[in-house]
Length: 595
Image (cartoon, rainbow, N blue to C red; front, top):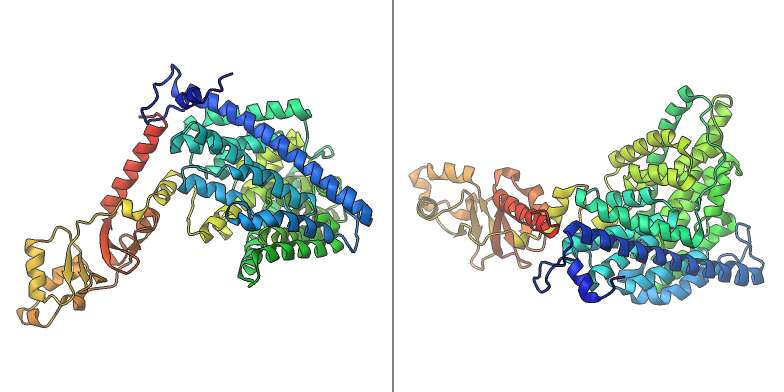
């Protein structure tokens, strides 16, 4: 097996020129690296599962057994377990909170957008031990987010080891995240869709497919060799007694889940922001969040941990439909308490729980209204799992394929198509952000699906602006403005500054045109500041997407760029935005070996 660092570095086909390329095509090199990422993701998933089993055994069977606590049973002291887990993991989370706190997937996407896929290697260790401590002790969080972050970090580590360029690095990070999800669920197609829809935000090329396919395939093969072929949720035989009635009802379920998805996103970030505003040490916030989760667990013990066993019960119709509705709401709150307070964990597994319970409530209600024409509440609960993921991440394909591969039941595909697509479309219409992109929005990063917005978001204004602009002092007379415009001006808009070089405003062409033909008597009375209007202003460190949004407003074709003191330092126009975009697009194409 090729393990020599120099060989791997050559396989990366770096553009640095320091290494002679081996006789492998660019695509073959990417496929080889995809296999390596799949191997790393599979064993990373195995390490995570081992740690998860260890901490669950420690807290619920040993410590919990000593206190008389049983998982899923009410007990007045159950809150002690999540508090203990948060107290231990919080020591490290508080010290490395920028890399370890809360929900980690947005940090992976940020690394893709802003850092060329660079993720610190210690994140690997954090994602193996800290979330498993929290979840294993009863924290309401999921394993899938941390596992995906772990796979992404492993892909990034491989890319750093071979000194891959940013374009290659992003592919390896996405392949790592997708392979980890595929290994976690024994779901290769869903893992690939996860990488494409959620990690790459729908911004992918055909050349991304080969490494993604081999990475998820490799991860699943190794995982099945270690654990056997697994089914995440065993559901009763799925059937649709009356398609003419039930298919429209599954479409209505999509509406219900779409609304619930938006409700969960808003509730989660509302509680997260309340924790952020608390004037107490960060470590104290972690303990408080775990304590509140534990107190809720006294009433609804099913909300503690990742809840997979209780989802299985819901799918089998174990719970009364009213209780399922209450459990869905309680899980929303418990998850927001745990992860929103800063304790590390994912939001996928809580999404399974919430989707199953809300959909089970809907199905149970229908069974009371139309008992002859509809299937069991468990059938609706099954579809709700995928629909809720589709709604909270605007990722219908991930929801559909994940649901199919977790249940291994093909009959579920048709109702899932209706519910997942409608839930995703409605959620996006009601609220433009997902669980991931709203976190990025709070960081000042606006993310939209597709190549163009992502490229514009990655370029800073200072890298696209020009210092060749027209400027005049605010006290310049109308005659001086006329002379400057007729003899020296290169552009149609004239920037106005004070004696310190700070921006006062801009005289747009429509105003200049009228001023040029104004009465001669006004020449000594009108000065530049009288003609200037306040324009949209850009700062050097803003993304170019901000310039694209602001350009053209108020009939100004050139936007001023100022520094932190308000001094004029540059100018940007549509031409410079397009030129910068084209440069970056060509650079990325070259990195992929496409030009």
